[in-house]
Image (cartoon, rainbow, N blue to C red; front, side, top):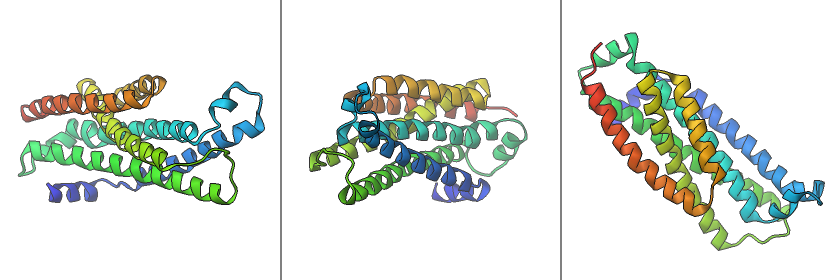
Length: 230
């Protein structure tokens, strides 16, 4: 499996996705500083009171980051799966002296690992830079605690798993329609629904459900690919 993942890395240039992940990180860091500055810029605004704690602004930033990586994962799944299992690309894939199951799973593993590691690293960079500057030029009157750090870590893990699960489900919808835009739109819709009710418990429950549904979806796609004719 590891050799197949290496082959995928050689065949598909992931620099574009690395650059996209870096851009997302920079933009989310900017949003975090913006959220922290709102109480100073608009002290009478309704949002000011709700953005006065580390828990609120870092939680919102983490949620937005998850949405961004979820859409990015849907784009990658679409590129690695939907586009390569149609037309001349499918003919080339099926000519490999390797089981179709192994090839398909290597693609899913590559994108899943990229999404999980990318989101975790992104959140760590964002929070580390922000807290480092807070130690020098504090914008917040709140206190950052070990309990909050633990909470953010748990939420980051849950969100990375959720991003992968929703990406796989969105990809499956696009695969059924043989449409990359459909997969991307589906991921945006799913993320919008989750972000609107994005409490900690909902995120964790949604992550577990997305993994379960993603496993069923993956099994179904394996059967389709196994019997696919080109």
